[in-house]
Structures are given as C-alpha cells and as structure tokens.
Image 1 (cartoon, helix red, strand yellow):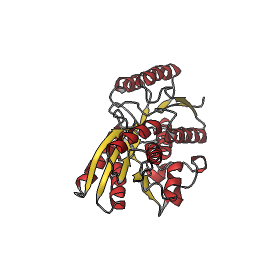
Image 2: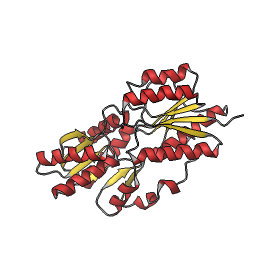
Image 3: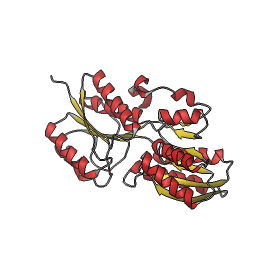
Image 4: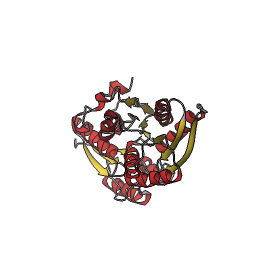
Length: 296
C-alpha cells in the first residue's frame, strides 16, 4: 500500500509560527510513514492564491488535508470541494464552518484575554494602552480582540486609546505602531494579537525613542528572548507547532480507522519572565506532542 500524502495548507511564509507548523506536520507524517505536500500562497494570506492551491491539491488527490484558511468566509466553497471529493480535512488554527473531520486550535478569546490581563496586571490595573489587531479575515485575530475588549471592560483604570490593524506581520505592525505613537504622547502598554506584530511594535518604539510594556501571542523564540531580557512583558503559548502536530495526528488516526473528536483544544499558557525558560528551545529541538497529551 503506498504511503499516504497529507496536503498541508498554511497562510504564508513570513510568520515563523507557520514555519513551525509545517515542521511539526512533516515530523508527525514521517513518523507514520506518510509524506506531506505544502501549499502556501506566494503573497501572504492571499485568498485567490489559496483558492488556486486548493484546485492544485484536489488534482493531486491527497489522502487527507490539514487546512489553515486565509479567510474563514471566502474559503468555505473551497473547503466544501474537499468534502465533495471525499477527502477528510482537519481545519487548524483558524476555525471555519464546513464539513470537516475536526478542528484543532485553542480558545482564542481566552488567549486574547490572557495576554490583555497580563498587560493590565503589569501596569498595576491602570494606564493608557493601544492594540495591534490581526488580519480581519482571520478568525483567530477577531476572537483575540474580543478577549482584549473583555479584559479592558473589567478595569476602569485602563484606557484603550486606539487600535490599528497590523496584519499579523512585522513590517505592517511597525508602521501601524508608528502611527499610534505619533497620535498619542503617552502610551503605557501595547497589546498585540501575535508575537510577530509585537516585534514590529518593539522596532517602532526603538525608532521613536519611546518605551511601553508589550505583550504578544505565540511564544516564538524571538519573543521569549525579549521576555527574558525584559523588553517584552509576556506572550501566550498559542503554539502553531503543537496545533499542527495534533492536526496531523488526527487525520492519520482517521486514515487508520481510529476515532477523532470533532474539536480538539490545545492549551495555551501565559509565558512571562518567571517561566520563559521552559520555552527557550528552538522548534527544531522540540518534541511533537503525543495524542494522549492533548486528547484525553
């Protein structure tokens, strides 16, 4: 029997979190004697390019698909094409409606809330903050912003001065933060929907000769280094590496005739200076989580 092929869709090659996700999928597939084919838009997060990649994957007839949509609305008809072809799909990271085997991700509202609460606690419950939201087409980003808003609503001493969209990328976040710095003489804290944008915020703060407490999401190695040295306050371990590993295990279990839950939530822990040493390891040296570690 030939080795099964897993088609793995990620949104871009500019976010190290997706590099980690592809690495995890490759590793889990290799362990099972399967292989992966990666489908990534050349233009980051480009819906039209991802639609074309879906057509290419359908022509290749993979045994299963790991699907991270560029847009949870625009890609619904494309997701349905896999179902019509009888190809099982694990949607991962960004939740979307449709006929799928399973969704693997984390509670993004809780993730956004946890990051915001860490920022607010770091400011002693009072201060002026700004937010760098993610791409509006990403469900993860929208949900994390809901978490931020919930946290801010609990603290009357916190003033949310404004927000910009940083598109979950470093350069756009740097430009967006520069606009916020120009508009506000005092900014005490910055909430960002992912670590890559937090890095852009740190660039903008350095450019302006300003300081502020900064939080992010993903637990990327670069963010861990900044947390360790006090340049970032915290991140949340929304691990695309772990999520993709479990998504790959899910489709392989299904192909092996084993049961798979309709939804799998991967824990996302707060990372701060007190515990960041646990994350000081490159993704290449990390072990992929076992099925039983996550699914109980």
